[in-house]
Length: 53
Length: 427
Image (cartoon, rainbow over all chains, first blue to last red; front, side):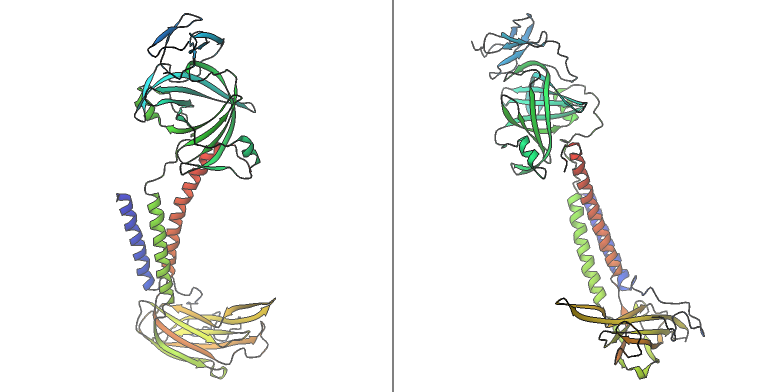
């Protein structure tokens, strides 16, 4: 097997391994619509009594 | 009178110039390169005709030149200059007839710095220009297991001849040639008023010609030649296969990660409208992975909107979010349909281990698609799991592998299309 093929296989294995590793930690799976700038006493923009549908 | 096999030279019966006999027993015509007289090789070199005012085409080869191609020693015994004129443009190329005592006759073509080696074949079938004209798609044929696709039809004539030939060439005689192109060869179906022949041509590199004929070659033209095989990377198929397999592995892993539900830290808790708003505690121990809050309701063509707030173990609000859960179904025009889902989820990354509080309220609900004051559900179920993984990055990796394979295939298709760019097929 020539060096290009070996390097590409290593690249594939590294990409798969890396993706699998970060996937176990849930990377990329967090909900993106969470309002995190919540302070005590603030209702936020989608608080418990919001009427937004 | 037939000539004798040991004849090595004659004098032109028109101008008296010495002419070498190079071409073997099948030569019928010898055209004097000095005076243009066409001599009958089978009848005492009697003058048959005289071609005057011919201009020798530009070619690095000359009569009598010897060279080696494909492990065969060849001698150039004849030269024919061709020209094709179409809509004010002109294309020229030169065919050199080759002779080998052991391998017979062949052609070495020179065109704009490119070289091609051609032999006549007798098992190539036939493709007429009429069939090309009546085809909806470029005609394809198969020859010895190789696929050939229509490339062009040319209407050319010869404007220069010299040397020995196995037939009787005529200046100005028109030849219609239909060409089909394969991966590494071209088939030409040539028809003139007198005969029709099929030829197979392959590209000869300048290095092969230079090494075989030991000559200084003119500069090669910049334009690519359609006969020149597409250089395929030796690793191309491997990269495509490895990328495809890696993409499949990534998708399978991604799906398995996505399907994983983690470890339940709040079992399904059933809540009715009277229970809201409600605060439910749950304990998180795994801060390396995600926590998922799952909300399910018994919706039937109805919807509900939940407001959710999560507070961390230090009683600091972590985030707020809203979720609509809606589910509709029915039957229309004899076909069943469904839309939406009876469940929804929120995933977040815990900041610390400890007891979190989930505040949840159903802010609105209704049947149909409006808020009509009617409850769209009778109960909801809430559950929380920790240690949840995500397949997103694996899907990203799968996409990357698909792109790599696609680029390889696309580049190959681009080069293939570029080979046919000079063809004359139009839809």
